[in-house]
Every structure is written in C-alpha cells, then in structure tokens.
Image 1 (cartoon, rainbow, N blue to C red):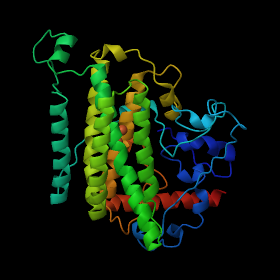
Image 2: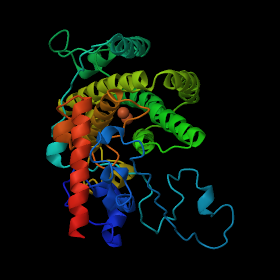
Image 3: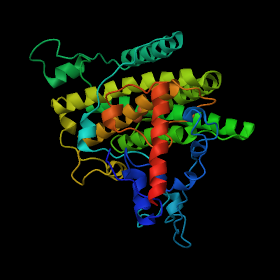
Image 4: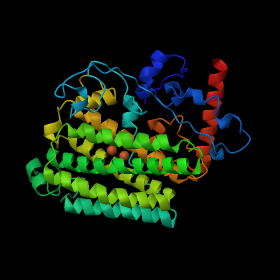
Length: 384
Ligand SMILES: [Fe+2]
Ligand SMILES: [Fe+2]
C-alpha cells in the first residue's frame, strides 16, 4: 500500500481522495473518521486491555451528496443505467466505495503463499471444509494443477485439452464463480453483527465496517472480471444455486460460531491466494497468451488507482493482494473474542510486507497493535 503521512481530517480536499489512496500508516480517521477519535474509549481506558474496551470502535458515516441532473426521460435517466456500478453521474468523479488499500509495486510482490497451522479441532474442521470444497470444485471443473507439464514438449492446446492448463475462458469462469461466493461471508458477518448491535443496544467494536469492506472488495473483483466475460444462463443459475445454499449455511454457522467462520474464511482466502498466484504464474510464463497484452478494465484502473497503461496482469496482482488482506484479517479476527474484543483493524491495517508474509496476528499482537494505534491517535491529536 502507498505509505501516506498522517493527515488530519480538517483537510477536506485531501480527505476526498484518501478513502482509496490512504495506506498502512494512515489512520482511517484521516478519511473522515477522526471525529470518533476524540470520544473513543481507547483514550479513557488506557489501563485496561485495549482489545476488550467494550465500546471502542469507529462507525464512520461518509455522506456523498451528488446532485443528480434534473428531470429526464426513463431512457436517459442515470437511474436506469443497467451497467452502472454507481448512480453518480458520469461527469462527476468521486469516491463511491468503502475504504480499501492501493498498493505500491513492492507490496504487490511481497505476497507469499502461506498456510496456517491447524491447532484446534475447530481449525481442522474449518480447513477440512475448505479443502473438500476445493477438491470437489477442481474435480467438477476438470482442473488438475501441475507445476510442470506431465510430458515435455506439450503445446498449450494439448495441455488445455488434457486439463493441465486452464484456457482464459476457464480461468474467468473459475474466478467469476469463486468471487460470487467470496462476497457472501463479509456481508453475512456484517449483517449479523449489525443486528446484534441493534438487538442488544450496544456498540459493535469496529467489526462491521471491516466485514463490509471485505464484502464490497470481493464484489468489486466480480465486477472487474465481469467486464471480460458475459456469463451464460447456465452459469448464472449455478451462481444462484450456490449463493442460495452458501448464504444460508454461512448465516446459521456464523450465529453458532463466528470464530469458526472467520477461520473458515481465512483458509478459503489461503486458497484464493494460491489460485491467483497460479494464474499470475501461468500468465507470466506465456501460458495464457490471450491475456498477455490485455489492458486492465477501466473499472479496475479507477478502483486500484492503476496507471493508464496498466494490463490485466496488474489487476491480478492487486486482486491477489486483496485476498492476502482477507487471509490475514480473518485469521486474526478468528483469534479474538467476537463478543468482547475490539477489531484491531478498524482504524488502520498493516501493509502488505506484513500481511503478505505473516498469516495472522495472535491475540497479544492484536492487543499491541491497538495500543500502537492509540499512541498514533494521541500523537495526532497533540499535533493539531
Ligand atoms: Fe476476491
Ligand atoms: Fe477474498
């Protein structure tokens, strides 16, 4: 992520753009959240564990008011644009997404394929479900990954026919299907935590926003790759069926054990990092020639702040970094008490040099991270 110096929220011009450009060292307070800093119980409960300061969190509300054009016919109305990703009129540029990082070149390359060691029965169960799902999905889609071609001299066509290589269409189908599922857990978790907050009339400790950010981030992956392939009716029905089943199972599972669910998502994201790493390796080895010079879709250039000459490869690197964030955040959240602990990533997140090389924060590390955030906030307040 781009390292940006701490900026006080009193600079609205900077704030407007930093929702997407702020990085590891930038408190989200700089993105308009800082009014919460003066009231956060972190400041009042320095003598107790920052993780269990029950009311500590931020719940930012970012209001984007855009004037829509005056009356217009249904044909020309901005509201009836079926391909719109935002209802903001085309001529107005602005932020319409939640916080997410923009990566520096070195961060994009810092990602490592990591596996978390399974320690408890719950860990093993969560990993087992992910492993089984992946094996079934590979079998159904006829994909057998091999590090090297099984016989020397096989052409790309022959490798694809034998199921050792995915064609660009198969890669897209795989990615689109998986991203349509990946957007579910964050929304379910956010929904349930939101309802809990309403029902128990107590604050959420910063988890809802991180879950929502993850859900939106996954949806943006889907929107990006959607621009490259028009899904068939059969494919859409598959997604519909999978979503119907998965949403409900995950909903019930999250009510029973949020920890187990975050662990499950952590392992799922390990697989996502593997998938995108293999895709990038194939692309860089010239095994997906259709994509070797393909420009990045416009939506992705806007979302990840890519350069105008960015290629699809750059998008894949950015998406892999996002999946790495999900891996790190979910495994770390699974190490906390979801009822009492503060989300350590509510205000800032480590950069990809940490998230890409470390699978999680244990509870003590999360606690330390919250303390550091507290210190940064205090310093920031002292300077302004
Ligand atoms: Fe994704
Ligand atoms: Fe993900």
